[in-house]
Amino acid sequence: MKIALSQITTGPEPSKNLRLIEEQTERAAAAGARVVAFPEASMACFGTPLTPLAEPLDGPWAQSVRAIAAEAGVVVVAGMFTPASDGRVANTLLATGPGVEAAYDKIHLYDAFGFEESDSVAAGSRVVTIDVDGIRLGLATCYDVRFPELFRAHADEGAEATLLAASWGAGPSKREQWELLVRARALDATLWVAAVGQADPSASGATVVGTAPTGIGHSALVGPDGTVRESLGAEPGLLVAGIDTEEVAAAREKIPVLANRRLGGAGGSAD
Image (cartoon, rainbow, N blue to C red):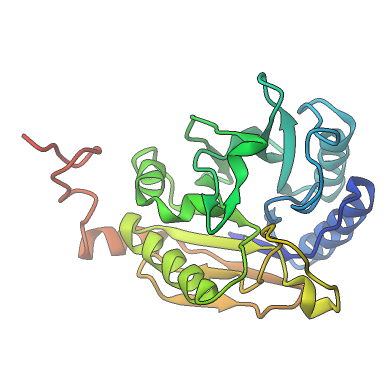
């Protein structure tokens, strides 16, 4: 199955970002992709007041994404913000398209490196997977990549790949951490990791101010053996590549880390 990673730079206006999503989805579908993954904060970039623009999953922004996915005949996964019950928002991944309708609220909030995502965002609590063409895909968002238990939970639920959407914060060694973590999570759970981030705004000539995580690019498709199969640079781009589920079975037979677990999970216990 071909997956497209659409590395874009979004701005503060949801309507303009929708046009980016539409154009990229059409390109990805033309290249044979069955799933098109967009970054976290595809609805509007971080650094934008989130509460005023948040919409429910049946609101006009999400409905427009559904229409784009239906027209192209593919599954679209895109980051948006939905209202939370306490006045904050949820950092939500909408997954929609033929036979698929799901939403994942980011579990691990980015309260790190001087940024407090939890000031405006409420954490999710539910592991979410989707099925496309008989392949199960887990959903994860940005800071989630630092928590291997989520990716193992995807594998425990039958996932053979995780779609990881991000708007990674820039800073010393942050690119190296991103690349290391994405590969490590693939190895932890012996599954494919399709990691798509916001492009680096400065690569498109934009001036970045403040501490909001606006992206560094370097989206990548990583195999279940931890090797990078395809990747992008800092600038906007579209990566379309295939995943082979037979590699997952082979990796899990050769390196049965899931079955050999002794602490929690489906593979064992600490007894």
